Image 1 (tube, rainbow, N blue to C red):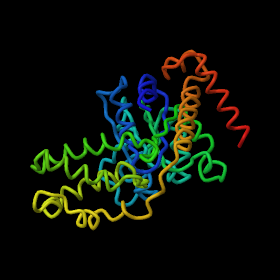
Image 2: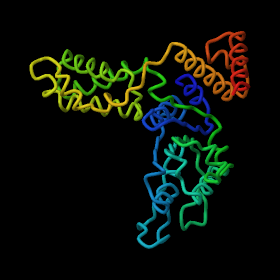
Image 3: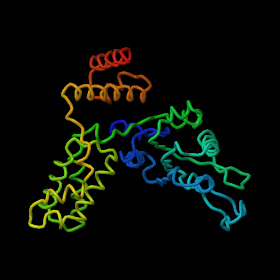
Image 4: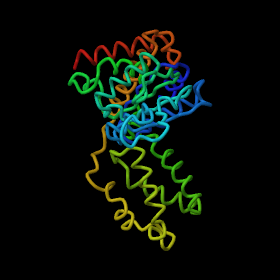
Length: 311
């Protein structure tokens, strides 16, 4: 994912980042911006699901003085205009109202924005990155999202994997979160390490439906209640279960080795398809990005074909 994001940073094409809530979509968008030629320019973000249609319209497109009752004297610059020369991040783009989808499409096509109440459009030079937890392609088929806007946004595509699909990342992520917050809380490193070890042991096999955001929440709970968790220098397991009850409930049965291998193979094939799509089918470039030989690429493509035919 990081290699694909680095490749996206070298281009000015729009990017669509998909993934479950809490998987770090905005973090990926910020990384793309920071590694791009626009890094010194603004990175402006707006959550399309957090604002009503009229407020989102004025926030994005801005307005002229007198455009509507209550309009600010002198008007207002919208985020699209303010992001000129920089990057505009549209989070939860799948929740954008249809009328605004049409207006956004014009911005992407014409590279100009028309404020509410204005008669003259303003040229803009910006890079747009959108993100969603929804299946936009399915929304297009159901008529809930404009097909032409979807293809304008999804020129380059990245999927942020859920935490349950990358269990090897759990301990490093938890350690980083704990270290950063333990220092701020003045908690000794040894005590922080013990708390974290107890959490990871309790959470073995947990599915992490809230992903990294949920992990961060649990780390913060540990730190907020660390005095009652280890009153005598030893972890109180009963208190830990009381504080983090979700990890002890409905834990899945251990996954067999064969299922783990299947999951890894599926992830590899998905990665191959995404990289090939990002380089327009150029197998030599895909091999360089994936760090594999042409023979390995061909073998994985054959496996992918067999998998699809079996389904």
